[in-house]
Length: 132
Image (cartoon, rainbow, N blue to C red; front, side, top):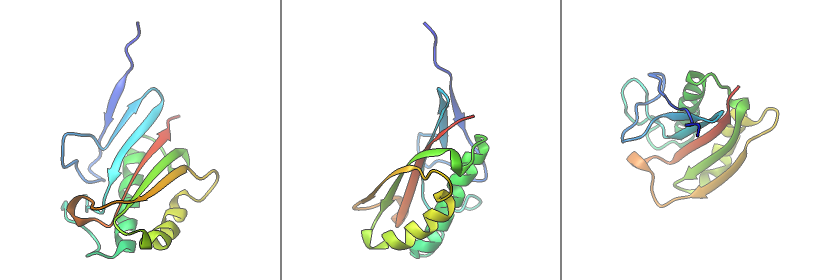
């Protein structure tokens, strides 16, 4: 019986986890990225003061940093989940999301409105990417 190799991915270019989880995990040729909110990697403080576009830019920058630490690009992402505190923000978030994930084959995606997000965030995004 072969044991699967599971490897944590961490980078100081993205916010440190605020709980018992990793920024991402590599397993079986797949990268599973934890959800990112608009935390500044250097200070750990929320970015944007409630501006969903500023938050989304930071979330996407954080995700790209985690992907880069694993040797991936956004074009290798095959699945995302977008969590919004207010679905009325969908159009604004979607426009910025398309700047990162709109080239080539866009990832499969779910987008849901949630009652609340950590630290009062308005948007959180996680993703799954194929390695290699």
